[in-house]
Image (cartoon, rainbow, N blue to C red; front, top):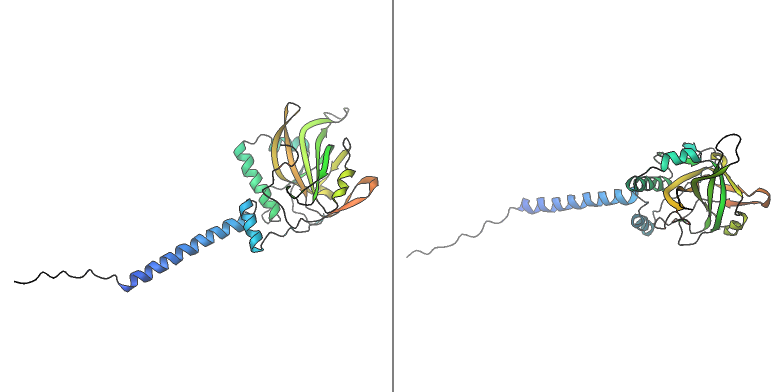
Length: 246
């Protein structure tokens, strides 16, 4: 009686394994490419900034001078209020991501650059710490002063700034006296907006802008000398902003 012999299962052709290996390699290459684009293209994300630090590829802040800073709009307090105050939470988050990315990448894509101008009354000043955005520096909180008309004394306006100075001369924070006027102009200060938010101050919702200078050198302190501001070697993008008002 004849036996029933089972035929062996057909083996996969050699090119199947070749195609599989190439498909896996292609998938790995695409994933690596996407991850690299995300990490290098979005240094404002704290995780990405930490990865760049471990790779030794942190963005190097350019030392601009007054004459070669990127082109941008210089706005006074009322214009700043109109531009930033009406943002929804989503719009604010998107704007802050772009503002910080622009700052950390030396404005390689010169979009959304806004310089602050105006007179601001100093309310507080202190040294910055390693837990702050700049590990070495000075932060000055001040409220805008705006004249309703040409015949009226300037009055407090619901726009605040936190001016972050990257400097090793942190003891100069004492030179910013509460009640004095901090005058900010595009030239020579070049203080650019890097973060926007709102706070409730004295029962009123106000706009607060975090600004940082991008033209470096000596910052004059009236009759008490000056101090040197230099590009920060490293920042802390995970630090809360604003620094003093939350």
